[in-house]
Image 1: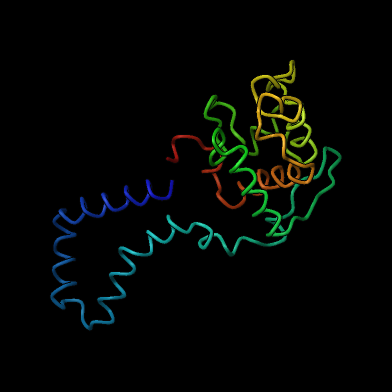
Image 2: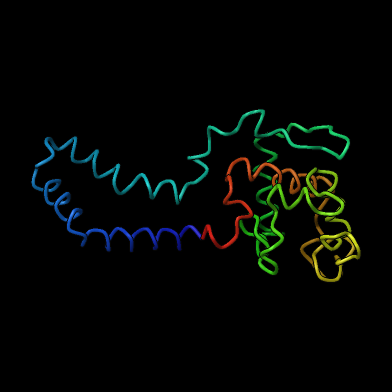
Length: 200
């Protein structure tokens, strides 16, 4: 994913270099029109490298967001909360990416773009799936969005681990960390989490 984004950025830079205002800027930059070598190098970094860093290393951009508010998520429907650690969220992210990421990259649902993992969609499900306990329950035995019937034969779960091998090795703690990551991710990624193809 990062390689694809990097290719897009490089193509954009190449295309933009042919734009007259950019040609003028690059000419002044390389011929000394902007002053000393230090300022020229700084300008190059600002124009070209910083956007690349934010795409290739998004965690570095969001490092300041690891605080108690970000790491506190609903524990259950009764209003209890859980304070996760940064290590737990990172572990949950790794397990999520390995077990769920092929269908839910960045919180979307590839098989149904109308039902993502964003907070609003989770809260409006029946029953609501916007807490650790409710998401763990879903991973045990998933139901349709309206809660009317089981979809365990279609969606990976512990109930259908005979069909979905990736679920066989997941512990209860793994499920808790996956759920925690799903709830923390929109606080870090904003609307791009679960936003679907409009963000890609």
